[in-house]
Length: 266
Figure 1 (tube, rainbow, N blue to C red):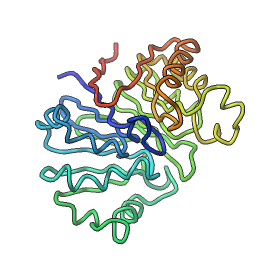
Figure 2 (cartoon, rainbow, N blue to C red; figure 1 turned 120 degrees about the vertical axis):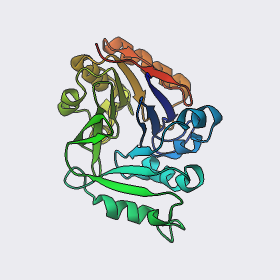
Figure 3 (cartoon, one colour; figure 1 turned 180 degrees about the horizontal axis):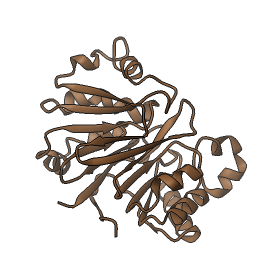
């Protein structure tokens, strides 16, 4: 079975223009893997997505960090994913400035939420990500620390897929994502915006830098994600043109709810 990607949420910070916050469902032949759990988790019950999830016996969730626009969807799961177990891969020290179990326990407990994770209707196993490699079923996962308030991690799965968000542009990212078929990378800023706001560049990515990462790493396709909520679709399509002009990677714009084939490398 070919690997498929469904963008569930592509925005950063808050939902706008019909776009949810960050969450991406990757379906391989063996595993269902949710990268981040923003408000996009609300799309999981949509009929075509629920049908695709039906054969899988477990939902894997990989968090890049703990900011609410990437984690609020965890609180949706008791009403959405009630019968099959969940494996929650959560970044921990020394990769980020947090203890995984403490962070999850803080997010999901009264008075902020009526249930603790132990009280979810299905079994949830919290797996702290403390090292730079681990496995999800047959898949090799590699991660790297990133520059972002509180820390975040970039993620690579086998040679097919990489997920980079909430980070300054870094040389280490190029090394992590080298040769992947599909790179999802935050593009929060245009180059002009980056020049005007050096503080934002210290914790978020800009178009020209991302295009260079994709070109240097020789990725197959680049999908810009973590859109600034103030940007209209017209603004985002202009960023796609900018990415195409700056680099050589094929650029794919993510439409939420659509199904994208992830090609095998080679």
